Length: 293
Length: 340
Image (cartoon, rainbow over all chains, first blue to last red; front, side, top):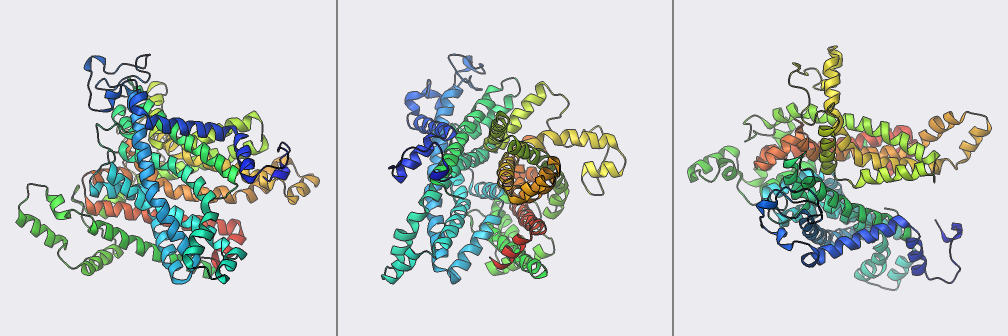
């Protein structure tokens, strides 16, 4: 939607950035998403101070208090050895966000550079990179990640490696598409005529035009990386106990279904909460920055 | 059309070959000796060397790759260490269960998401639309295994009608031998008790598997219908006095169905991946359950087989949906034929 069609648009004289912020604030779902994401990040950073029972994050046991349903003392109940589920969920966000940072921190730059090169240089570079990307995209992601972590022996770092190996392809394809579209623009030709180096054109001219798309993609990705990591842990191939991880907690808790439902359902809802936040934020950013993925 | 088909089939072969080589490389490069893993820590060095020779692990890599690829062409994926049967037999035994689940899931997705998307478009910007939007959002963001557990919980407590594990009641003596799909074979044999029981077992896993796709396709259908509703031909049809029902479902939906079908196709391909989780929770005896079991046992041949088969499924599903789109919208055929 352009500014012209928006009857409620404020008076003229706003910069593009103010306009974008305005559009973002007018979208209640995006604001809710941003608030959820902020709450998850804060919980992860300040976990030891926020959690009502920080010792529950480790291999602490309190057998007198095991399997107690949600109450004022333990908002999400306690697990099979009496640890506070709420505290473990808060610490679990640390693991989830650590995974997001680890995976996207490597996969996104790698995917971007390959996409830029494929789109800019064309020819053989393009054929090799894009065919390889196609093959990687043809691999069933979860099955691949399972196979890799299983062969490497299951733990957090290997789960991270497995997901990273599969994740860069999406960014390569996205950047490739954008760069292909930009190659006919005058500014690229102008830079070339002015004698700019390949490096300059790639990283100073083309890359800035990819930023909004990448920002949206990263926000949507974050939710899916959390989901992916939790799925691996749920199958016993991710984070190993006693590290509090949401997927592992759901798996352990599901042994006590249906009577002691909170042990599986509460961490499950916590995963849902985080993914929901990143999705709403990503959708909001997409509308705000007006990009198509 | 023929040139297009040929080109697509050629690309498909290329991708499949790449897939096979890549999986071979991953399986060989990763640290850990498959023979040592297979025999366990107590095996002597001679035993390990003997098995290494039997498995051809001491041959040069190109020779190993050749043996592996020529075996693959003949449908030979090696022997499973877990079941000591040929991996191909194991996979073929498990495949119908997964196929039936995935197929039923897609049927559910189409039957639920497209009508709801159309309803959301008709009642756009009303509370019906908002309610449907929340449902589709929840479908997208709920992890499959969380939904599976919640469904099991609800079913165990309130809906005794839907069993929470397995594919058919063991008390019913029936083996699907024609197609391997219990519902179809039950129909062929005229055993309606089998069909009903199989459907009961299918329902919960299929819902858990379908949710994400339903959410996505609903939103896409809504957007596409709204976009189409402003085209001239819609107004013209109304002006001719064609009933609204016909305009909506016959004219508009046909044009609007391209985008949702594309997404359904992509979803269909990813279903086999998500099935890993759902089959695990519902003890569904399919290829994903087999995959998880063999992965946990480090049964390398079986793992390669499962990944390869799901990769083939993924690629073929994508090709099929592309062809279907070509039939629905000839412009797509031309674009895809000229591009890439």
